[in-house]
Image (cartoon, rainbow, N blue to C red; front, top):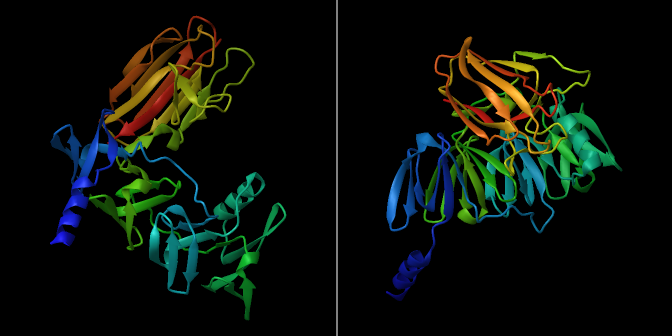
Length: 388
């Protein structure tokens, strides 16, 4: 009886995590997350519990959970679906990989789902070389070693991995390599068909896990990874649950089918993605934005969006980094029909765009000269995104 009382008291004292839920419309609501399933979120606000349809949710943020680094020196594993997160231990054979991390717990993953393993520490000199190897084309597994600030590799077939050794085959020869001497492994994998994850889980360790389904009850998130493996996460290690895949497409993730730039003077101002002309963040009315486009006059960007979306949303204005004399004319068209047109000045408050693009195949964005030639014509389209 005493044991049952203790369990009941623990459940009563448990505090559901505070979350901030953002909908596709851009509205945000806060409360305590009670539960989550494949169709709805139950959010406690004041003394009532409200149900929100998951189909309208963009993301769920856990504002009290801060990003942090592991006290140990973790290495990282990457899956073929794009998931990437730090772990503390790893063992593998030809069929499966067993991993363990302070946030992911112990997981058993099919070996074919792992695309790379990094044992070494990344620094500014090594990161670019490692990324280049990851993106390169190869027909065998790569065993990557570090020589000072240079990465080199041997190609072959990786076998089992223990705490001390890595089994490696080069032609007819089999060698046992000291794991401490290996910077990383890049596996040769056949291209896989890309599928949209149900949810992308961002951990406070900055790990990213793509899940085909998730459920939340009590204080624990249960996730089915796209590899089919099951994982559980305590609410305290979750930074964000992203449901935007398939619902939202940021323009900075797309390539225009045509770009036309007409300078007023000789200086060339190319449009940029997710950053301002100086490489810093986009800033409007004192707020910084991590996603969006920087566009200078006179620039025409043309996108092919294939009748797949219902709304185009953005926050538009002249970037804070320039004096208050910026002046541009903006025109946005869908299939040649004007959806928005107007002047944008530095002195104006940012404009929130919400344009109906149903049935639109071709989206054109023109930033033209205003009344001040091209001086300080640094327009930002922050959070520019297409919504299904």
